[in-house]
Image (cartoon, rainbow, N blue to C red):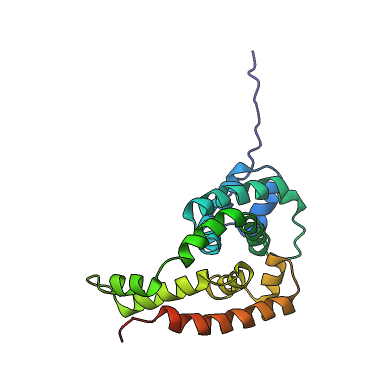
Length: 201
């Protein structure tokens, strides 16, 4: 008796070398391997972005999963009008904004601290360089910016997005992004000397 020969068409698997566009198209077709590749690619950027906006690593960790769930559910709606990264970071931005009430409790504790004393103590730690202290100062100053201004600074300087791309991420006109950046720079120029009080040259 002749054995029945079964043919099986194998679906191409997602590769870490695939472009974002290829991966999102496969996710739209419910390809879990493609979602895994996107997750690995964007886990770090989303985590850093949301953490810097909310000041809470636990919230940021939750947000990564929430963002990728939205990507899984809405991949088919991605129209290609922007980069995939812009679309994903836009989802991350909206998720971060919804965490306002939890973030506000953290900010209240932050504003109550005497940062000049903290800086003086931390600088005294063995091996702590001026560069580390300055980076810490910048981080603390950014945390005092209004969240919408801080988002623009983060996306520009730490993630390399253009004003036009940021406008799509935060869903506002590019001129509004420029205005927020102008006010953010002015506020940082005011805050940094205040927070740096006590740091020795």
